[in-house]
Length: 310
Ligand code: 13P
Ligand code: SF4
Picture 1 (cartoon, rainbow, N blue to C red):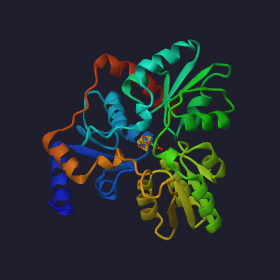
Picture 2: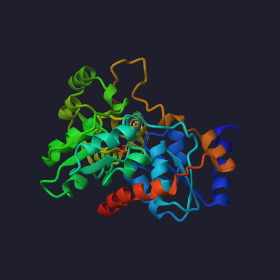
Picture 3: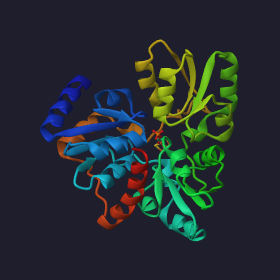
Picture 4: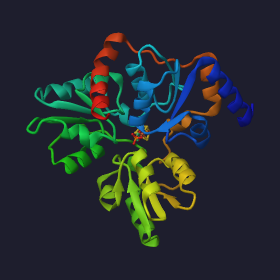
């Protein structure tokens, strides 16, 4: 089937099954274009919470589908490729994290949404890059805070909020691969460009940046800015929506250390294709199922975040 045929078959199946397709900004352009909703991690969770569809197809990575299922236990949540994981979520395994947590029994545990359900079950309040500052600021002063799993986001939060935090030493392989030297060179060659980055980038890149924010916040910044040129330090999938909404702006993807590796593409996000979405809807695969007791524990920490973000 060619893409046009796939798109029309996907639309037929969506109507038949009362399904919605939710896509993250890092998805390939044709997947973003077929989605009913495109968003950052927070917006995807918020949409999943309120949708009236019977089936949610999550065109993103596994923790996003898992989060949608936890907050919607009665709905069918499908992920078109169950191998779509996340190196950051994988950098925090539940057994080690439980041991880490035990060392600080008084601490409030804040976990990034890029974690497994098991980690969320060990968490007091989840956050995304959109609401992390708000979440940390909601914790009473004087309380110890554990933050997991991203060390770059953790250090950023500690700087912005002035709170000391005990930070898990995890990272995203995509965001740690940007080359500081090449970005400095690009900035010199493009003095009129603004550098914008995701808080998962390393500290020196954050320091150089004119703006730091979630994928949705970066998109909003480009849309509202009077500047015309931007060096964008996050997964390049975001450029599709940026360019679509701002056709007159010049967007330069920030380069990785090794320019031949494509290491700033999230290989997990890129596993989702139109063909897999079609198969997912047709065969009801791959359904996300979570043990009830685990989901109940994880739901509390996600709901605290959603209530704080209304
Ligand atoms: P956002 O919540 O900013 O969309 O980020 C998700 C993510 O996985 C970044 O790598
Ligand atoms: Fe995970 Fe990094 Fe991919 Fe985001 S870009 S989904 S943090 S591996």
